[in-house]
Amino acid sequence: MSKTTTNLIGILLTILAGTYFYITYCSECSVMAKEEPKDEVVVPAVPEATSYPFAFSDGDYAYNVNDNYNFNMSSSSILMPLSQKVTDGISSLRTYLSENAEKVLNVTGYYKSDEANKSAFPNLGLARANAVKNHLAENGIPSAQINTMGLLMDDMVADGVVFKGPVSYGLDNKSEDADAEIQALYEKITTNPLVLYFNTGQAAIDLSAEQRQKVADISRYLDKVENARAKVVGHTDNKGQRASNIKLGQERADFAMGYLVQNGIPETKIITTSEGPDSPVESNATEEGRTKNRRTVITLSK
Image (tube, rainbow, N blue to C red; front, side, top):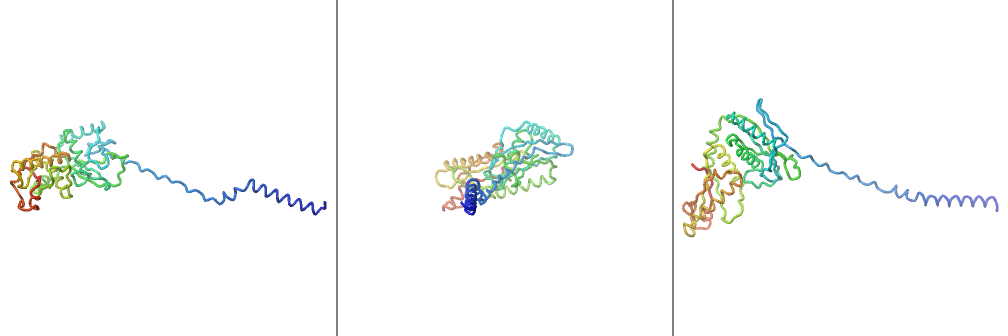
């Protein structure tokens, strides 16, 4: 075999060996190089639940604990039981307000715009403040020394389905115009009372924004005036026997009272009666007139 032939065979063997090693060990290199890098999975951060304290202060007097009244989302019902720290705070507040009759407690309930307001109040924050006010009154703090308000707080974050303490508090002096304000509220309610139109068998009452404000006004007046009462009068059209209509009017009045009680107005503050067909506001000769006469009127008792 000539030297040239030997060299050619060597070159050929080198090429074959290189091809073999490339296929065996590097065939995946080009594939790997062509693969797109996988997108990094970004897990969104879960916002921390907000928590508002049971806190109030006035000069040298102060109380502050990292606990409060709690509520489920879209609800104005207080979650029970309360913590011992809140219970102790209520006792402390009761003593302070009894010794300082010129002071008032401002209770502000928070709510979010995406919550469902199932209450009779203009917003869920006011309904929550009213629930807290009622609980404080049950524990010896006069409702006359409590003001209630609602405040939109869309940056609140629930702990699951529970809002931790969506209520704030402030101590202040009674308004110098308090008596005039109460008198103006009385005139507002009695001049333009709350009127409900519904059938006896109706399972719920759906209030307009204006009607919700009237409920809030009535509730506030009853809180501020010790002997005040809400008067709920049921009316009917003149179809059927008068005795039956008197009974029907009373059923409508009692139904409305139950709705008010469910929304935090004490039953002891409500008087119900029926005038049946005796006080029509429209002619009973037309269906439209009879519809207007089938009503329940909620105002203040003189």
